[in-house]
Image (cartoon, rainbow, N blue to C red; front, side, top):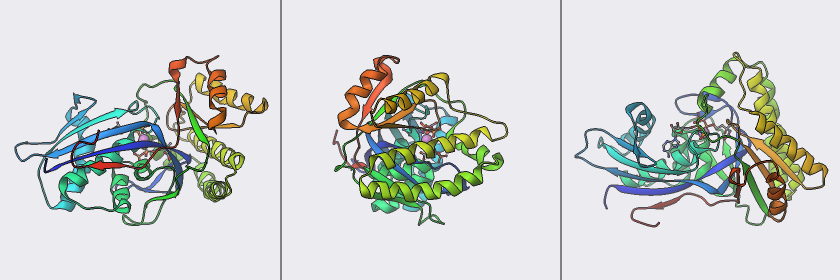
Length: 329
Ligand code: ADP
Ligand code: DP6
Ligand code: CO
């Protein structure tokens, strides 16, 4: 159908974190970051521009969203409409195959899919770089969900030079990520508010920025050298440093729950036993464990002794965004 666009985008988990903006409107980050796109969690979105509508209608998981919930989506579509020279309202239908707002990166897959579907529906012909810039305006982490595998979000300095760059599709690696879902409820402090509060008030923030620039160089070396230990150690320490900045904020806050700490300590124990694996956490209580594919069954079985099977989700490196004007599912 004309005026319709569809997209499927996968979530990504940052190994080197984005935490803080230097421009809230353009969503320009304070530092470059690097992620791995995953195959287990994704969003599918359809956008249809329709002259007969009075305003945008946003359905998330088959539920019509109220005006407050729709505001971010409408503001994002306004960017697309402006670029395409139209004012037509749209019906947006999105399904998250990932818990929403739980620290499992729904904003990354959500806004990447919305950018893809909306640009297609509006007739904008964007290359992947421009699509990455557009997705960034919805949510910073969405910048990286345009591509599969390892992706660097180069911070840049303006709207046009802050985008994702594919580094390695990870197909020559033997990687897996185990998600330990401690709590999939919506978080109390959104990523957006959490990072803003941290940049504004945490005395640890300057130390974070300094060390994250070094971590990015180290992790890119590790990717080039296929050095799993270096990759994992750098990822783990970078994530911990990000979480440390939040304890220094005013008022202080943390996304950790008791089970998050238990899972992190368990990873350290598994390493003591000689199983190479490393953790990271985002703006939420859930723990992600990076390991070799071949070690995954063993690691999952060990985790199953302290967590329920339903809390353990396996993921592998995932693909980039998939776009269609018609049906491809
Ligand atoms: P997460 O850890 O899930 O990324 P965030 O706090 O970063 O949590 O972002 C959650 C917000 O992202 C939601 O409240 C909503 O505004 C937006 N979002 C999530 N999924 C979608 C989607 N499919 N389409 C549009 N916006 C979405
Ligand atoms: C901790 O991209 O969700 O997951 O740009 O405000 O939408 P907004 O925030 P978001 O922040 C992600 C923070 C993080 C780290 C990361 O993904 O790099
Ligand atoms: Co997010």
